[in-house]
Length: 440
Image (tube, rainbow, N blue to C red; front, side):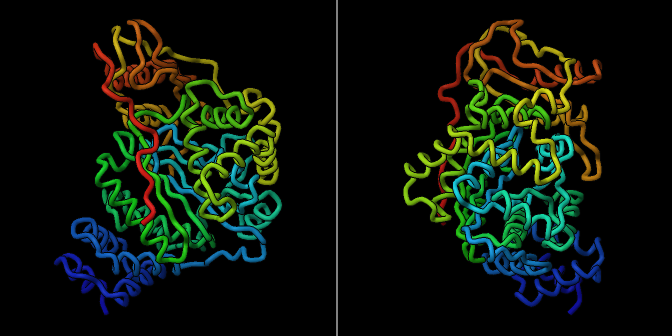
C-alpha cells in the first residue's frame, strides 16, 4: 500500500477502508508519510468528507496511535468536558473543581488558544508557578489526590492527532467535521473516560457559525464518542458575544475565581449558568445523579459551601501554583492598571457583536497566538459590562481594554468599538445561551 493510492482514492470521492486509514495514521505517527502527503489527504477529506464508518475508523486509529491512560485504580467515575472554542470561554476552570467536588474524577486534557479563541492551558499558566506540562505519573498523582488534573497533550497521547492538528491549521482544513471529531474523541478517549460532555459553540465567534453545521458536528461527535465506548452528550451553546465579562488570560482566571468565591458580578452570570448546566450533564452521564434537578442541587451545595473553591485551591497547589490566588486573585495574578475605555459612538441598543473581531483584537496585542509557537501575554485583555440588547448612550463605556502598551491598547479599543453595532431598537430576542441538547 502506498500513501498516494490512499490520497487518490479520497481525492476521487471514494470511501477508504479501515486498513487504508490505519495504514495512513500509522505512517503519520512513525514519520514514514511526509507532511505534504498528510496535507494532501487532509484537503481531500475536507473537500469530500467521510461516511460514519470512515469517521469511526479514523478516530479509533488516532486514539490507538499512542498510549491509553489507565485510571481504573481510582474508584470513581471518570468524566470530562470539551469545548469547540470561543471568546471568553473559560468554563473548564470552573467545571473541573465543581464536578470533582461532587465525587467525579476529571482527567482534563486541554489545549492552547489559536487565532481568535482562548485556550485553557494559557489561562491556567497566568497563575504564578502553575504547571500544565505534567508527566503521566504526575497527572495521575494529582488526579488521585485532588479529584481533577489539567494538562496538555503529551507526545504519548494520540500522537497522530498532534501532527495532524498542526497541519490542519497550516492548510486551512480546521473546519472539516471528520477531522474535528477524530481530533477531539481521540484525545479524550486516550484519557480513559467513562463519560464526556461536549460544548459545541455556534455563532459569529465560533468555528461553526451556522447552526445547521454546528448540529451536524454535535451529532457526529456524540455518535463517534458513544461508538468508542464513552457516554457522550453535546450541548449547542451561543457564541454570538463573548461569554461573561472578561476576555484575556489573567482576567478570565480572575473571573472564574470570583465566581467560585460567590463574588461574580451580573456580567459574569452567563459563565456560571453555562458551567452549572454542563456540570449537571456530566454528573448525569457519570451516574452520580439521576435527574437534572438533583444534579443542580448538588452543584449548588458544593459551590455555596466553598468545596469547589477548596478543590481549585488544592489543584493549584498540586500543580505548582500559588494557592493564595484563590484568596486574593487581584494580588497574585499578572494584571495591569493601564486601561483604555471603549466608548459607544452613539446612543441606542447593542444589536450585534462581531465576537471573532474582539478575539482577534486581543490576540493582536499579545493576548493570543497566530502560530502555536507564539508566546502569550497574560496581562492583556478586555472587559465588558454590556450584552446584546442592552441600551447605551453615546460616550458611555462599552468596556475597557487592559494593556501596558498605550498605542497597542488604543488600536485594540478602536477595533472593539467597531465590533459593536448600535441600532435604534433592541434585537427581537436575545440569543439563548443553551440552544439544544443532543444525545445521539
